[in-house]
Image (cartoon, rainbow, N blue to C red; front, side):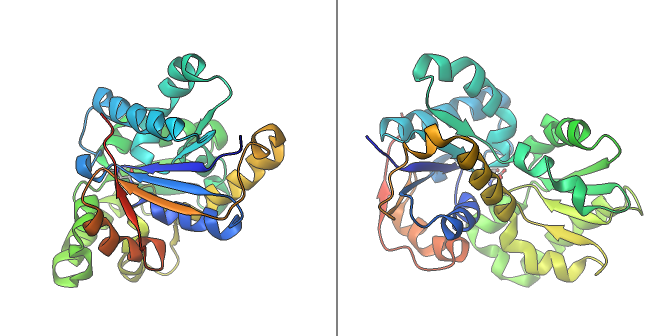
Length: 275
Ligand code: DGL
């Protein structure tokens, strides 16, 4: 039976990725799952992020999804490889779980002329070293400078990012710390799916000659290429054009906040339990 694509994030940030994927491929069915009750994942240890992510993936598999995208850098950094290598063969060897880090690192080197890029991410993503390792494989001549922004996900999830008097000092502090690491950075990657909501402020604060890159379009392009390379997966995806939004948190809160991430209002949100 053909089924929906599952998209997972710790909270609302993955909607910025799903938006780009849906724009390219409105024909597929999608189920979005946000683990809002347990967000943020950024400060959590490896084992916890892995357990939570595995529960979410299992839930989406149980809903029938043959393909799950971890639209979360922290989960991609801390859980994806173990799920792909250890869990998937035992759960269902023909289902697939994809992340957002590999697609991004495969192209990010093309954006920089100075060969110095800055990565802004959660504490968990930065500590994992995943970007340093993966960019090093794809673009060995590119220097990676990382800055953790532990307050940015709570800023976005709470909606406080809309108050510039609150948000600007928090954003500026991390940008200064990143740029202090090198004068040569010409490309800054928003390596957290929540950060595109901060893009206008980040863009305004950074010098105009620095390129600011969000992941949504990159991940959407990568998925299109993946489905072309894997017709056996593509033919397992249902094409009803439906959207389902699910959260472990409060559906009303999700509904009110989701519009800013998704680009338009979200009418129906289901409450789900992962345990
Ligand atoms: N959107 C997630 C990411 O891309 C945020 C993680 C968190 O919950 O801290 O990393």
